[in-house]
Amino acid sequence: MSEQIILACDDQGNFQEYIPKSVGHTGLGRRHLAITVLIHNSRGEVLLQKRKHQVFDNIWCFTADTHPLHLDDKDETIDEACARCLEREYNIQQKIEFKDYGTFNYFGKYNQYCENEYCHLIVGEYSGQFNLNPEAGYECKWLFKHDFLTDFTENPQKYAPWVPGAVEILKKENFF
Image (cartoon, rainbow, N blue to C red; front, side, top):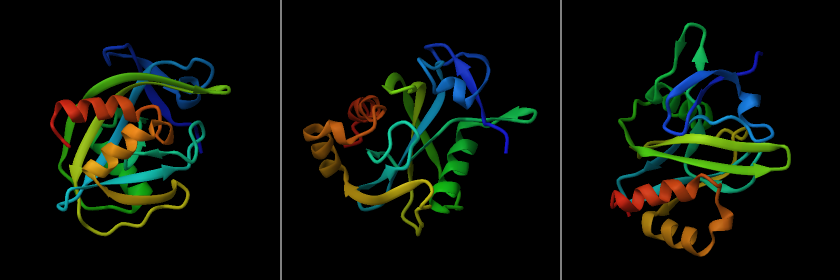
């Protein structure tokens, strides 16, 4: 299998060039487009995942994370990348209506790897069945919005480095 091709961008999310995923995630990396997906249900809970991750392994983050990919002759849309990611990580095949809450830049480094991303915060509602792919995460859980916010505020070290930027957007949008 060939390496995924992602979209390098500037700090405003403007496309610059196609790069191998490894280039975006080694050394200081290259700024590139990314997506963090937060699913909530009709009971006011958010779905969190303890991810299996090359860089930030075994820590909590939102429901799913991915990049829009360059596929042969086209680039995935944000919605297509979200759907691909949710199907791979949870076997969710139902179409979900997503809302792009906004974007933020962040950088996190661990040894020779890094995250250097212009990240879209994508939120959708889903109350159906799912099965966490054991290749994607160690565990997942539903947590009431206010319980998540309390835990994040008291224990930010338990969460991935992209969660703080997303939480700030969610606060501004009165999500909690």
